[in-house]
Amino acid sequence: MNIENPFLPIRIFEQNRIYCYLFLVLPLFLQFCYAENKKTVDQWREYLAPDTLDVLVNGKRSGVMITGFTFDDTIVTSNVSLSVSQNGQKLVDLTEKRSYLFDGSLSKAFQEMKSPSGSSIWELNRRKGVWNITIITAGVRNTRIISSVYEKLTGTLEIYKGIKTKSIHVGDQWIDTLIELTSGENVITTTRCTDVPSEKNKFRWIFVSTNSLQGGEEYRELDTNGSSLYHEIPPFVAVKRGISPVRSSKTEAGSANLFESFMVKVQEPPIKNGHTTVVTDSGVTLDSSVLSMYKKNGPSRFLLEYEDCFCKDSDPSKLSDTSKIYLKPTPTLQTDHPEIVALAQKLSEKHSTVCQKIANYTNYVSAAIENRNTATFSSAVETLRAGFGDCGEHAVLLAALLRASGVPARVVFGLVYMESLKGYYGHAWVMAFDGKRWIFTDPAHNVFPACYNRIPLLVDDSGQQMIHIIKLLGKVSIVHEE
Image (cartoon, rainbow, N blue to C red):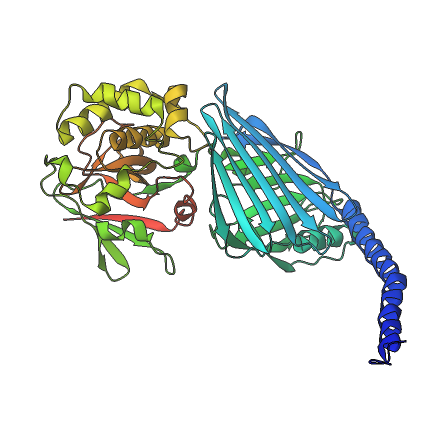
């Protein structure tokens, strides 16, 4: 016996008793948790069903969307695959997986988007309590921290449970939060039941969703068992084969291209030497990356257009540190890639001045890259290898070549006036620094300088901030004034 501490045996017993209790109670606790988890997952298995829908683009069957769920004892995973073609050409293959814990909270997410010109991957994971999103484009991996993720599956489960038990009423609504992977932003979605099954609506459950990203309505019809029959997912429409939706007229809408879906009609064409005013809906603002290009006037903004639309050469060796930032490589503008460097050097052999480079590089990209719709935002290397792309691919390649040759350049997303459409059309081009100011150049339309008829809405070299364009869909109007 320890004489110095006669209470030691008692303390040892007390400690051991605690360990004994833990040894006996912990398995029971874990078994209880396992049973509760299994009960919850069994509920999900009962209520969540797979769906296969045809994808319509402009009223024509252009692909297929498959949704389903996989289950284990602690996790349910939502699986979505979307494949779309247009005019016989593959536009996009999208795969998305989102895994949820037994309490409905998001555990991890994965998204891959493939087009003929390249692919992009987004992976969301939580490590040591910190959320990270990894973007892989053209084999280049880039990881950043996401401050918060609030996504849960519980609202979806409640809807499907209500359908199975027929306990949903017109006007019932559910609020969920979804993490948008390309930007890492949390998007709040509100789903509302607008009609219950009846002979009048072909015995359909009808739901309408709105979200804090787009604001527009997303319409959906389900049968009495909860299977999807019709789903508007701008810019696509998905419908079960052989089914006539209640809102059939909507099937004629749709576009396979985000920019095509961004169209702003105007009463009058642009006025020479006039002003262009951009007006956004209340509560909606232009992105900070373009604010310096406008002059604020109440809720409106005047676009600052150049009176003297000319490129002015300067000494490229005297670039400021600020402008030199836009010579650096990025995961999308791989200015240090051997193929980009070699092509830039070859093109520079005959063009020594800054303005000559911008003009001739613009002409080269316009001629070398075939205009073809793509659903992804491809990198410069992917575009160069593919030899085709839409306005985004043209802009990315030109910006990378200019940077590689010592000319600061950035990619601009916005609107361009199209006379044939009597309105502004979604577009992408480049802003290049001539040594004194930034000037627009448009490789897809082979226009340099491109000072007029363009409305900048976002400057983004990565293609990861397109969420800011989506926020403006349907919320922008344009006025031309003397």
